[in-house]
Amino acid sequence: MMKKIYSLIILSILTLVSCNQDEFLDKDPYDQVTTENLFKDLETFKAAVSGAYNSFQDTYYYNSYFTMLPDVMSDNVQAIYTVFTDIDKYETTSTNADAKRVWDKMSLAIAQTSIVIRQAESLDFGSDQEEATQLIGQMYVARALAYFDMQRMFAQPYNFTPDASHLGIPLVDESQVGIELISPARNTTAEVYAKIVADIQKGITLIGDETPSVYLLNKNSAKALLARVYLYMENWVDANDMATEVIGSGYTLVSNSNYVASWTAESSTESIFSIVNTVTDNSSTSSMVYYYGRPRFNATTDLFNALDAGDVRKSLIVSKKVLKYPAYATRDNNIPVIRLSEMYLIKAEALAEMNMDEDARDAVNEIRLRANLLATPYSESGDELKDMIQDERRKELMFEGHRLFDLTRKKKSFTKYSTTSGIPIAIDYPNNLTILPIPQAEIDANDNISESQQNPGY
Image 1 (cartoon, rainbow, N blue to C red):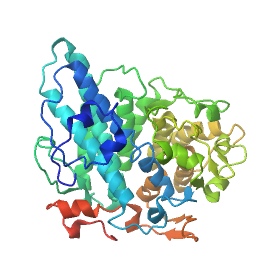
Image 2: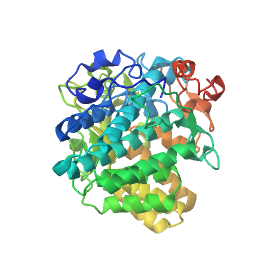
Image 3: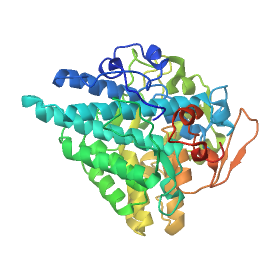
Image 4: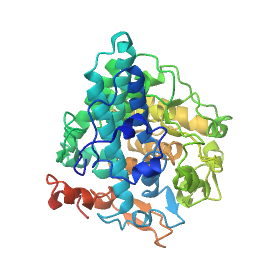
């Protein structure tokens, strides 16, 4: 992961919460030497778990790059500053520094969670075993999330080939990562998704019914993630079942009158899993909150015009400026990863694909009518209904890192509105450049990934 992994230094797991992240990230996270004895009891295990969660908070992951790029590379967002310039213009190369940063950070998250799981499973926590087991379950789901995110960013969608036999990302040898040099080969997309599903299912069996924080993965957030994964796999039955379970588990949609204000709060009644982001550990002028608040990136006119005049979500775009993450001064907005509204949209899409149009309309209208109290409920059927559901996903999940993946998994062509290139770019499906390249540094260092296995187009 991928670049030959020696292992992770102890600080990357035990004290990443308190260490200087910028200093740490200046080092190659995979060319470090560590020991197998990273923790010995519940308290040090908790510190290791905190370190693993902290990887997701990083600038090059949810706090900026990974959350922004799927909107920047789609028809939702355009750059007005020289950040992600080549990616914005669809002129990315295999040596692109931003692509490598995302790859490295996701690789680190996979390596960290794998090491923590392996070592925790080898220990007897005695009277603390029940709590330790739940933490192990959280790490299985966290690893699945990292695999899933990396797969979406660096490999074509599951349905790109009929049997998902096209190249996906590498799966690490979990028994050796952190112990010796490893050079994992790329697996098929089918194999990667099978691993993701297995990790989430394992996590669900280990995690208890109660996890006290929206910032920790619990049984409901694991099921919600599994619903999303099943949706991408076009496993409509299981996607609907998982989403339905989560919808019925006690969360409630934010009201129309509270919708805009909910984005200033730490969490809401529909928050299922979020990445915590405090004033102390915010990622400064590289954070998503800064990029949108400055602004360095704007909403496209096309997106703004797609929102009806009475749609409360339109208030989150003012003069093209994105207001969904309003804490520009302190840059400490928490980053939503999964919300209840997505579960209704997953349910709607899955039901529509199973030709259960009436139930699908009921689900999507929960979101439509919450957003616009005067809207006419959707009455469409068949392909028209399916298109309306995708339109609703675009509006509800804008700026949360979904749009590009929705376009490509639905095999849609689109227009990339690029300010830095000066002209709109037609992105026809299938397109080689809607995924990022395997970093050239990885190919150069990894004997099991050849030049011929680079993503086409790079």
